[in-house]
Length: 359
Image (cartoon, rainbow, N blue to C red):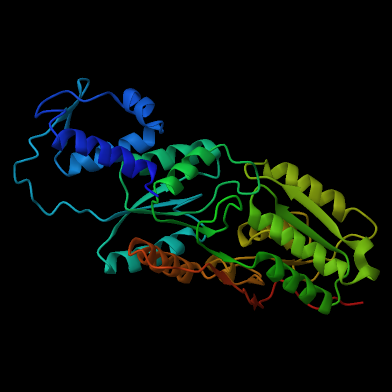
């Protein structure tokens, strides 16, 4: 079945080759083509962009699109082999490692990358997607934005799917689409680290999870499952949920309310290492010793956690490997090869922020 993008491209090309539109004739506008082919503006732009690269069409700014002298030999090595990479962040936390892994594999295969970040907002995700489509990237590697919430950009993802543009997700994936993905078994990993805290003698544990992305929801569910399997301790579980962009001070106030209870938690399991480091700093400001008074664990094995005091007990995240595997998977998609999703099984990295509870 011919996809929408190919239908527009082939239809316009046939109209030009057949002589319906002659050299330097003005072509229909984007809006007219959208109506004629019943497609979105992004499909029209991609089709026109390809025909422009193939020298069937040229544009005059503010004047429209015209038929290029397509009989002429325009052959030049113009294939940029550009891959779009969209992540929630670029320059901080674990993202430089992931992007480095992507770039190493793609650059060896002759590709360049175009980076964009969403700051975990759907509005910026939309702008990033439109920019990538307008840039005529050959493929996309995307980290979903606020993946646990309804996504207003489904029309663009459907467009990508209809156009058969090679694409995959990293870190998480939208369940409504069957794009390939590379992610982590967050649920079982979180259950493992909570079980580890149980083994250290902790019973009252506070879990703090970001719940506007699927990773956070899965990690929270792993926390819950660990308690479900120890029904005698279930009543001692505590959970704080928050969303990205929430004021840190409000989060610390909620932590304080738990610490003031008579059965205060003796350990805190954090959504990720970035949060764990902030929580430890807060606990120190409250004259609490970590881990002597309260243990803290994270998730992601952030490099800074290794050198923090105390060094952070956490779960591993295959950062560079994830990037490299995602890039390798995309190259297969570009070559029309079949691929299978990849899910990593994180292991506990035991350091000094969690110790055995003294009775």
